[in-house]
Length: 535
Image (cartoon, rainbow, N blue to C red; front, top):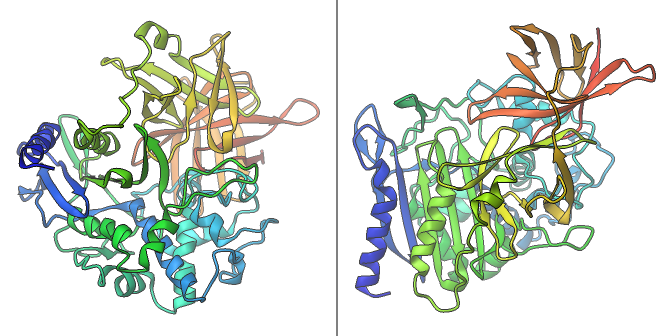
């Protein structure tokens, strides 16, 4: 890369960061690693709006789920020493966990194919969101109450923070020391990652840590954090330290080059289809290149760690602005670094807008009650929303549309004959049809419903012109959560949350006489939870 190439790349980074390069705005930082050297590091915006401190090279951020690859690396180091096996059944190290009638192995946790329901979603459905105070014991209790799985281990992919919390506890059980101490001694200190640390308590004072913010009206609000952090997302880090971590994939200074290969090694599901999720990294193709990447999301913080090893490139994008799409920002920066490189595929074009408009609207899978909505943004970008989380769609090389965000297998062709086929994990194809007519909530919904697996009661009662749920859970209470009719016995429960206005899909359960006997609820990462009618 010539000096002029670097100049052009730096100017591209400044243009991408320019919307936040002003006083009174949080912002982001961008880094590009080429062939083991950090060749670019640009930032914009403020690390602290209260103090007017700009984001700079020393600024640290909560990198959230980018921590997962470090937790997996700790497991792999212990395996290399013969102290555990990734094929071990998890009860061998965590005997206190409930027996869920299936064999769950450490490997399943690392690859997000265990079937374990996500603890953060379980807490939310019990009325306790990320901003509310909680303890490690609360999270472990939510995991311990489970009596079922999302699916049989090894058969599907579904992102689950539960698995990585448990991996962190396995590291502690095997090593005999706290996860943060093990990571510091075995990974961070040897690699010179002096500004990276594990922070189990969000109240811990961390030098150089940027404050996380959400857009609010014409300004910003500080993001509130109440949950403890473990192997699923507890690291604070920065661009320079993540560049040191990236270099270890090639040099093998810690764990040998076998460590990096093992982290990025894909494995098949039970049906033979390859899981896109390796061990704390998602492995996909982008413009004809293999990428190994992961995102991080915590209130007020977003991270994109994006490797393209065949091109010798890595992009790191981190924000303390909850409204920045760092996944898109990172890929735009990768595009700029790939400019003019032979053999790189062009970015596929989206279908014409009239064709995309046939996608717009609400779609329903009538058997489960799952829903997805589509709209076309003002700039022509097709947007999908599931469980309240909107995400952009991009054109794939096979002509389909795919989710333009990490850790989310989602691909579809434009609808035909009123039906829409969406392919997700393990090659699973689900057929949706348009939700019909002007829906109304079914009669007889008012009452109290209990879910033993959540230790939670939902009370459906009149609210305004409709109905809403009042939630009483083991840690907190919430509500009213409005009920939205979809079609027939399918409905939606709106669940306000710290990160976004969420929803869960719900379908009524009826007894032999046709009376409402319960509600089956499915969120993004916890499926098939049953609320039995009590009164």
